[in-house]
Length: 281
Length: 143
Image 1 (tube, one colour):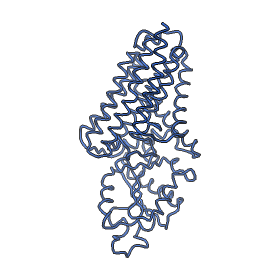
Image 2 (tube, helix red, strand yellow):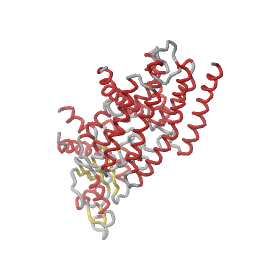
Image 3 (cartoon, each protein chain N blue to C red):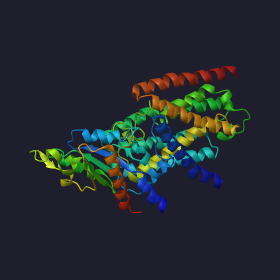
Image 4 (cartoon, each protein chain N blue to C red):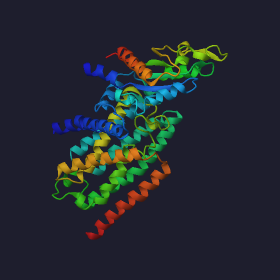
């Protein structure tokens, strides 16, 4: 039990950081550059923690701590095999506080970035809920422990929902064409968008919380292959590579496009899959 | 301890401000990000946000209009920070030194750590200057 808690709270963000580091390296190689070392995200986080603590107001600091705590808690709950719907809501609380923290600052960059982050949440949250509904239809319960008692992988009955994960992951990771609220390193979108007024140790906390969220979504993607652990991990990493590929070939698009695309394509795929399942049973 | 020391040298984030430059030095600075020179392998990222940056890279000379803007950007950055003056206009005012609106180089407004001369400064010189700035930054970092 203690081992699971430690693994969730310490190892999962390290894995997330390594994935982000590999992401930057792979992106650089695709662009014909050498790229930063693999451990670069860890150097970034440590350096940020060594900087002077500056914040615009106290509420912003509270928001960062709540965002960090929710993301960590959601990963912990996943490893303790709890209710998947609750895990997603806990993660969303954190994301909402990131937005509220950005809104508590009066700079126009933060305000616009916060509104755009809300639109991004509006795009991926319904899709994530539909993924869990699909899992409920197949297993009869939202609990991860029930999913882990199955002998056949869910991908056999939920293939289209696995493809919906590509859209969800793209929006959550803020990869082009969905990097509308804040862009990753070396790109700027309204300066840093929702992250503009976070600096120093608080920015380090948002970065580590992002690693928790990344590993949470990749674990949910790996759950589709449950009894075959290795296939789950391979599929999660393949999803990341697909996201990096899409990121490098596409440009940033508009909020309206993101909403319409995720609803039309995402909800259609999810509805078809769930509909077919419902009538077959 | 050594990992913390190492980290302060390996992740220098840059914010670039064009004071009154002809853009020659700016183009050379931004070309450092291209695959030919690729400063990202040193961990250098061009964040546009002074609150998140360690190095302030300034091109161009200071005039009466942008004096306060430059000071504002410098004040927004959190410690530890270094300032790099790129190009001869940022160092001393350059060829425009005697103009009626030019105050001079940026050291008239903010303390400068590294001066990179040149008109325009070449990317190799800029990378060399940024490396020196990183060294000064790690000396300023209290671990």
